Length: 282
Image 1: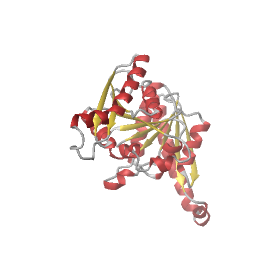
Image 2: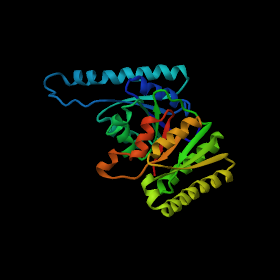
Image 3: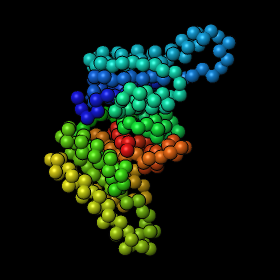
Image 4: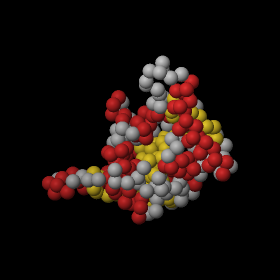
């Protein structure tokens, strides 16, 4: 049993969601709650019998859970399949909370339009509203632990991500890559080089602190400080070049409608990552 012991995996019958479920079994094969959500009926219940409507709406749900059972049997995993009617992101978040889950696992489609599709999607909303950590598995990504990348900017949110990354790296004996990106344009550097140098030193301090924490726990760690206008591109580029198995990011606390947006960096990293991304909640 790993760091995460009680998983909730959301499936909708798509190959992407079932792939994410199969990969989640690398984390735990015990006490896995597999959730499929049936859409609520918004029409006139008098047109058809209530039981007929309910049965009709549950069909995709039942099919998805049947497919999940077959995968679980093949991997000798213990799962609890559940079908609930409602708004998907609300059901996933509420069920995870009510059932005391410590990790939500979801799949995400890759490709050039992924980022546009992610905004306002079920995955984005779950990340925004959930108090549990969320693991997002790309359609061709595999869960692994040999090399873990964590991004830090010195904030309390990234410190939470660092803490989780250190726990995972120690448990799985992984190599930890620490990345801090100073998001700054060449124009700013040209007009205010002293300001930029000061910021670079600050980011170097963030990385050095994490490496010290890693060394104290016997974790092999390497660090990078980069300057770029696109932090997400830097993170994903390093992840690909270093054959990273897992990217760990912090999630900024948000309220109201802002919860629907994770922030451009997290959103873009998830949309373009070739490996799973773990979003750690404060």
